[in-house]
Length: 242
Image 1: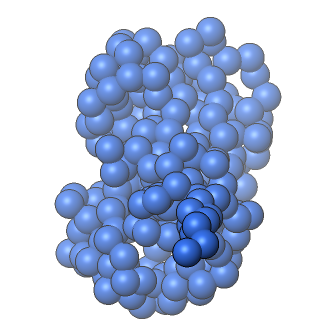
Image 2: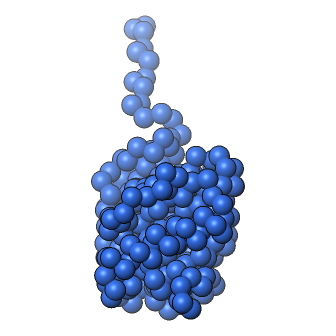
Image 3: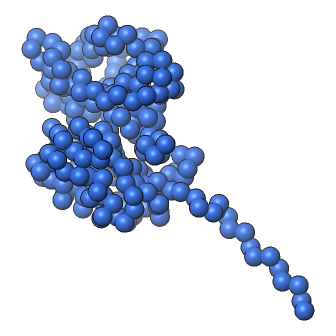
């Protein structure tokens, strides 16, 4: 009998787990599929957030994004609001119907894959921190997101809605509306004050500033403060499963 050749080896490792990472924002919803080591399998795709950003409308966008990318084994999503065990409790910059909405369960049902959901700042932090000391993350986008890590242990915060300046909150002074209404000079002044205030409040070792509006920062940041790429919010989606 002729000797059979061994079966050809697949170019992909067996049981490779690919993660569809979704970043839900007030102005855009982004998605990308990543390999276990964080390498993109496809280009990042983006669709503007619906004006009526209800759960049904947002899920429809995510389903469309999922269909345009590579195959995936699981789903991670960052959401701009308070999230506990995959359930949304607040969504100040989106539409109605989110309070008590099981977003993780809905994603799993719509996409047919296991899903995990956390606050978007939490997810970006997971993709940014070193895991050593006290590390604070603030995201500057439509609103202001926040999370603190103590030796890698994540604690969600709502600094954005905390009193900050003359009766106004951090989000009132640093959110997208404030940037548009009061201009970049005033926004930068408020950000510099916020950096000093949060340093006194948390005594952090590192502060990471994320979100699309970091591109408007015009002053020199302190040595323990740095900006991080929005892509970290997608990379953090892998960490959400660890």
